Every structure is written in C-alpha cells, then in structure tokens.
Length: 179
Image (cartoon, rainbow, N blue to C red; front, top):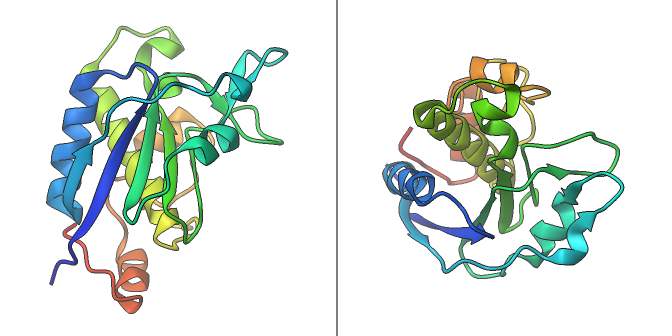
C-alpha cells in the first residue's frame, strides 16, 4: 500500500533545473505526487556576513506553508546554530524542509563536476529531511538515509532509502511509501 502525499519542491534562488526535475521524478515514484513551485528569492536577512553563509533556519521559516510538504532547494551554503554547516534542515513533524546543493557538489571539494553524484546526494538529503517532516529522527544504521551526515563521506556511504526500522516507524504512523 502506498500513501499518496504531495511534495512541493520550492526553489530558493536560482537552482539547477535538471536537479529539480530529477527530484520531482523520484518523489513522484516514492511519495505519489510532486510539483515544482515557482522560484522564490533567498531572504537577504538570512545571510551572515561574518560566516559567509546563510542561516538555514531563517530560510526554512521563509518557505511557504501549505497543506503539503514543502522542500526548499537552494544552491547557497547554509549553516544552523552551533554547526559549521548543514546539508539541510527540517521541521520535525512539520511541513517544511530545506536542502542546500552547495556542499553536495563534488566541485566544492576540489573535484570535477559530476551531475550523477550531485543528483544522488541531493536525493539522499531531500529524503532525509522529508523523513524528519514525517517524524523520523536520526537512525543509528549508517546505511539508512536517516543516518546523520557529519561529512560528505557520510552522505556517500548511506543509501537513499529508509531502513526497515524507519519504514516500520512510518507505517506505524499510517505512512506507506514506495521505497
């Protein structure tokens, strides 16, 4: 049984269209429905000049609130309080999540660009943050998409799917997805 839910992808600033379309396709397969909303501007007040990064919480709070889950996708480097950076942030049991593509790009680490690597990393972090919106916390299983990623190596090591334990938690809440 697959629960049909709608994920709205919200570009925040200019975002690579190919990545957005890839996420839309995968979310349609996993969650049931997905649409890409018109781009919104990155809130200038979220920029921290001393860090040279954007505050993820402020961007997250700027995302529209709708009936569906909204996943903000941005290209800018983000951080959360007390952390040097984050790949994303979400409202636990909320409606909004955010990912940044900045540190998911191989070129951030001095490597050649690789769209396939970027796509799978973006998918992992997006499904991870949506997991938080659905009420999942970090998982101890390092292969589970809900495992905490402290580095890009952690992102690369985990799968893009929820482990059996996390899937069971979702099912216990009446959430059935196609993974």
